[in-house]
Each structure stands twice: as C-alpha cells, then as structure tokens.
Image 1 (cartoon, one colour):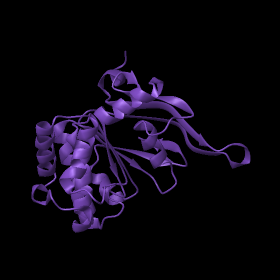
Image 2 (image 1 turned 90 degrees about the horizontal axis):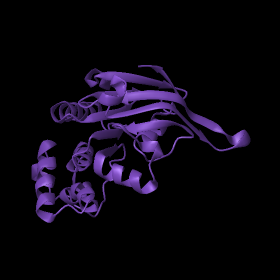
Image 3 (image 1 turned 90 degrees about the vertical axis):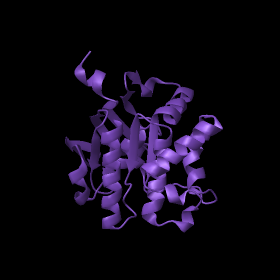
Amino acid sequence: MSATVTTAALRAEGLTRVFGTGAAQVTALSGAAVSVAPGELLVVRGPSGSGKTTLLNLLGGLDKPTSGQVWLGERELTAMSEAQVLAARRDEIGYVFQSFGLVPVLSAAENVEVPLRLRRTPAAERARRVDEALAAVGLEGHAKQRPYELSGGQQQRVGIARALAADPKVLIADEPTGQLDSATAAMVMNLLAEIVHTRGVAAIVSTHDPLLMARADRVVELHDGQVTTA
C-alpha cells in the first residue's frame, strides 16, 4: 500500500462530475485528484465557476461523482451505502459554509449542539463539548446570543465551533470568508489554521481570495473543472 493511502485523511482520484444530459450537459469537474493529511490545511483556489464547490461536495459525501473514487482514511467513501455515508458525514466530517448555515431561532450554543444531538451524545457530554468549541473560537461569552445578534465574523466562528464540536477527522470549508471583510476574513483563516495545526484535523478550504493563500500548507488550483497545479 502506498504512503498516500496510509497517511491521507481524505483523498480522491479521477473525480469527474457531469450535470445534465445531451446539449445541456456540463462537466463541472474532470479527473480531479487531491489528498489532505492530518494536520494539513489545503486550500483549493480558483475563480467562481471553476468547480471548487463541486469538488468539496464530492469530497465531503454531499454529492456522488459521475466517476472516480473518494477515500476517507482507508475506506472508500464512494463505495459506501447511503446510510454509511450519512454516518461518516455525521461522525467524521465537519462542514463550514459561506452562508454560515446557522439556525436563526437557536442560540450560538444550541447551533453548536446540533451535530451532537444528531449523534445522540449524552447531555453532560454535549454541554462540555459545546463549551469547549465556543471557547476554541473565542465566543464563550456569546453562548446565549442568536445569529442576528452576532456580527458576520462571529456567526462564522459559531459555524466553525459547530463543525468542531463532534471532533471530526476532516474539516471542509467552502468559501468560509466569502461574506466577510478582509480583516475579519484574515482572522477567520488564522483561526482555521490554528485549529488544524493544534488539533491535527485535515482541512480543505476553498477560496478565490489570494490574500488567504499565506496560511495554507498547500494549494491546489482549479480551472474549468481541472486541477492545474498542486
């Protein structure tokens, strides 16, 4: 078995995703290969429409490729049943979204608690993990506030805390700074890098912002659905 297989937390080979049929057919991703190791922050760079979101959705089990394979550790995610993929997404993968994805009627703490409730984590353990996750992103004093009471940067930090609460092996973030000003975006990217490097999480972050490249351990560039550099 190759070193890549044994060390990568997440890897993919030959990923292709085609949408539509006939004259309406669009190839959003073509033969992409990518891998990320524990404790590595991998940035996927490319302009809008280059295939970044499609790639991240396939890597995170949110979509299925037309062809190609994805491995989570040494298990092939693309060969799992729907129930197995759901379990892997719940237990091993954390997601951070550009739109924050918070439930408006829930407090910051309750939003962070959502994945733990899905895992049926006991109440005392849930409370401990929520407190730890909010502290990790510097929001321990905002647990009872709802999203509309928080700034954009604070909402995104709640989103990061929610992704971390279940102690995932892999963190996938799709344009996590896309709605933030440059100073707040830099703060969020610094936070992600610190979490990845201190906790040993494997993280894949998409962006088209060249200012955020400096915090990456490695950069993959997508152009017209193809990996052009790595």
